[in-house]
Image 1 (tube, rainbow, N blue to C red):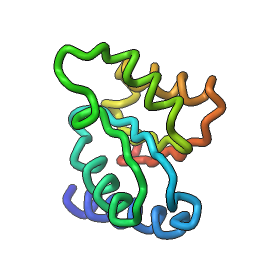
Image 2 (image 1 turned 90 degrees about the vertical axis):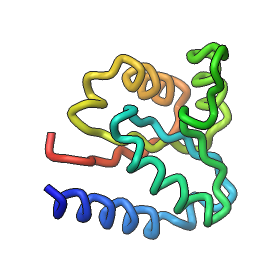
Image 3 (image 1 turned 120 degrees about the horizontal axis):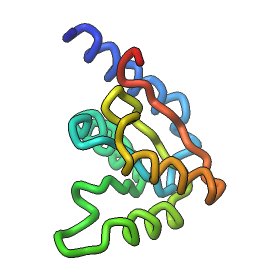
Image 4 (image 1 turned 45 degrees about the vertical axis):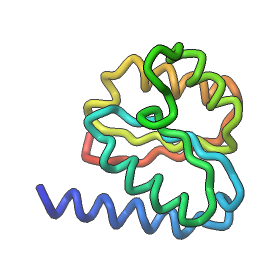
Amino acid sequence: MNNIKRNNLSYIRNIMLKIFHLFVNYRVFISVESKDLKYANKIRNFLRKLGVIVFVYDESIRGGEKWREKIKENLEDCDYSIILLSSRSLKSSNIKYEIGGAYFMGKEFLPVLLEDI
């Protein structure tokens, strides 16, 4: 299992490097299920080093804020959406809401497969 995780992280890093020129000075929304947050953190840290503004719910939504409104606002503001796909995320109504929102807003998105589904 650790090899799969290491390969996934390497895969994610390679994708980010290949499309680096697309993301400079952009805002990126990362759609992630809470149990997959460690992958989002790695992507977030990598992109921030490149100067990208990154939205991930865990640090962008404070207690008491209306979740759906903040998600919609940040999706509207983003240039791209990265969707981290796992067996857990495919069952999440929140992830489905975020994917649907990005789609209907006409956002370009990059699905990243975290595991064989």
